[in-house]
Image 1 (tube, rainbow, N blue to C red):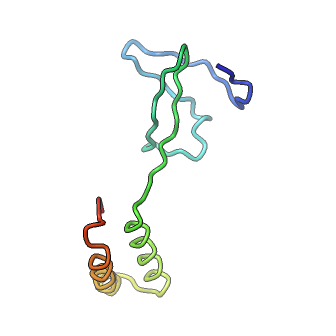
Image 2 (image 1 turned 60 degrees about the vertical axis):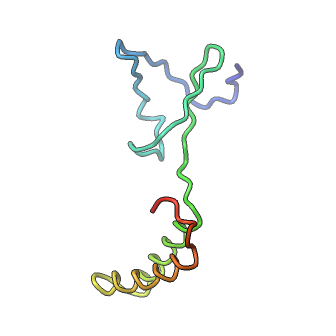
Length: 100
């Protein structure tokens, strides 16, 4: 496998419990709740960051929340306005909501 474009290298050890520690400097913008897909190819273990994918409905909800916050709503007023807006979103997205 060609790793000629690799920018960082560090030797790591597999523990007796089959665990590895990912070097701190490899994390960059990752947080501790990151998930990876793991691939075994020939003699290489490849970890690929799984980026969260939001549904169009979730994107729309985030947009509504941002808009309401930008308008200065907070506390009970934010809750009330968000509930009203979500009702209209649920009606227009009926059956499209997968996990929210």
